[in-house]
Length: 198
Image (cartoon, rainbow, N blue to C red; front, side, top):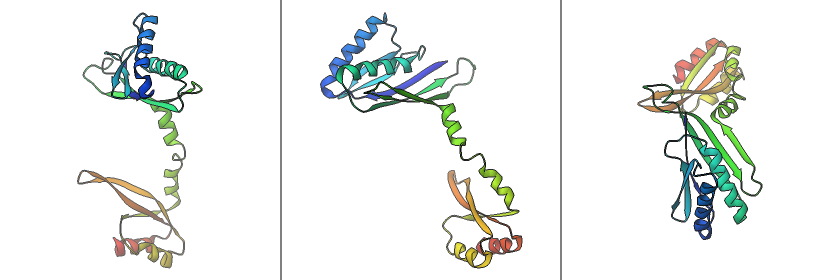
């Protein structure tokens, strides 16, 4: 599994050359085994994984940035993303899968990592129960976004027996589009609504 990352680091224009010296020093200290490449990019540095993405470039990038932050007394945070590539494990299949983000507090050296698995868990929180809400109503109608007047009609004719549940996502003409979904507990009125605003 290869780990790929690429992120800018801004230690301040006056610290660019000193930061490159720190990088060379850390390479010597680790017998050339630092799994990152650091290069000058204008008035900032660019940090990326080593040539093959093997090793632990994320940890080494954090270590490098943290050492610069300590020596230069840098404020703020440093963010970066990384991805994993499993193409070697699955012959014939190439692509990045998994990875995450990291934010390093430059003053305290605290690094917060969030993996894609964590992100997926966070995305599920608060949403896992919503689909079951559809079971509360026996009829639903999808309306094209941008229609006028249907909310007023619903208020007048449904007496609160309807709910705007969510938006229905679909693809039309190659683009992701949204349609509003209304749920009803009175089927006859719902059919009338569908026919009227269709």
